[in-house]
Image (cartoon, rainbow, N blue to C red; front, side, top):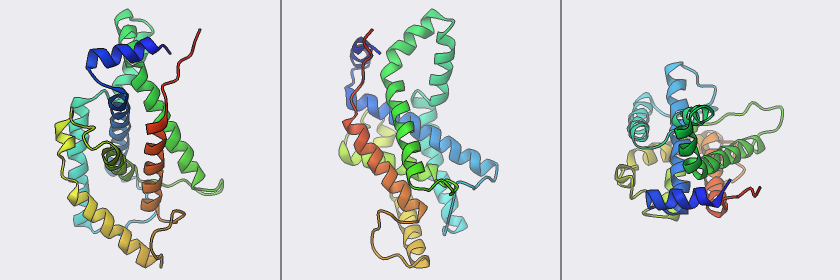
Length: 219
């Protein structure tokens, strides 16, 4: 990896390192929402351990998350686009040059994915089947990064001004129901509840992402 790739991307796009991390994060969010909607389409809810939402609440969530997904689909470099560019770069000089420019985003994308995978596995012992809610990770990623950098998505005005109240209310209500169901008092960082685990993973990953420096391999 070359520091020149980082400088080139920052110069050509007029962005800083926080923006680059945000672009990588948005690519991860798009990927997770894609998996969420694929699970819905295929009636594949093995990713969910417990769910106390009503059918109406579930439909509201699907509608709100779909708005975010479709916006990202049209306005960022998605994982699928990055993957295709990387494949083409092996035989096309122009695509290779694009990959070199996008290398910092790819670096941070892989970092986020690895962090989430590692933290998911840490939440379960080797005998447990890992359960997760990709849509909640996506939700908490946006909220946590915006909390750290309030105007970070200013280049994505739709996201910057998106009203997350409907999603927040449903998530909060579901957590309350689940805590009552499992007789859990207050906040527990070691909670058995998947929504709480997703919140913890997102928070820890964002904190780690903020500190992560772009590593350069010197030849």
